[in-house]
Length: 347
Image (cartoon, rainbow, N blue to C red):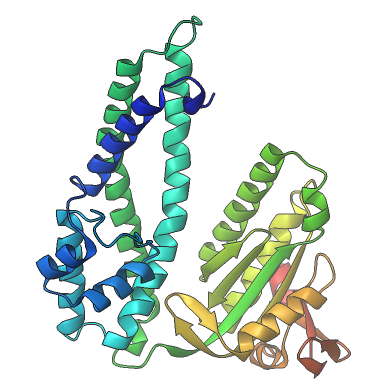
């Protein structure tokens, strides 16, 4: 049930304004020049940071877009940079990365909020009469006042736990430049995903993706690795140690085989130096892992020569050399098929 179909547009505007003020901590009262002056930041710098966070700037320079909270946040961000905690040339990239992450999270949270509001609308409209607009406004206020603190607390908790986990992974790198690291990079993707999406309903697709993300995240984190990102039918992950990465890859295939109703997986791994940039990874190892994943047969794991050499004495895995692969960017890419070894079978 759509709110816009049953409510006067003016009522919707009022409800939206109430939600916005709750979320923003107050009404929009400042133009771009005013908020920059209030924060003590040059206008050009303020606008650059604002856009990098993913927010549009109104074409009208006299439009009241900003709140007191915006001014405080801008002042705090610039103070953080100017204190030396973050390099000036990294500030825009950092806010861009944060903005992109928060944008995805916000889209999901708004979908949850809309679901609650749709239930409330259905309840007030169940008898076929007019929508109780005041009851709906009260429900919106209750949801935002109750949900916002809970969501903020949850976000803070998850962030702190991930910060602790990342710190633990890098405990031996104190004082080192951890933007350049040697890691095992892996990809796992579902076979036949594109054609499958044409044959199943949207709710079935949602369930499929939820199962895929849940299973892969569990295997990766339990195996000592971490998820870099998921993009539809593919998950990208990393691990510090070759043995952990190999066990994760085999574990992903085992989990997929345990659910024959789901698509098979292809997995590719590569070991090498990477650039770590705002949680994402870049470099040749990333490219090789992606090419190996695309070349792998359904239900198999392919690794590159560097990772194969690092696993040569690991009895838990078995490696079989394959013919050099001709893939995009590489005319003769050495590849090895990874399978469980005698030590793994014995356990």
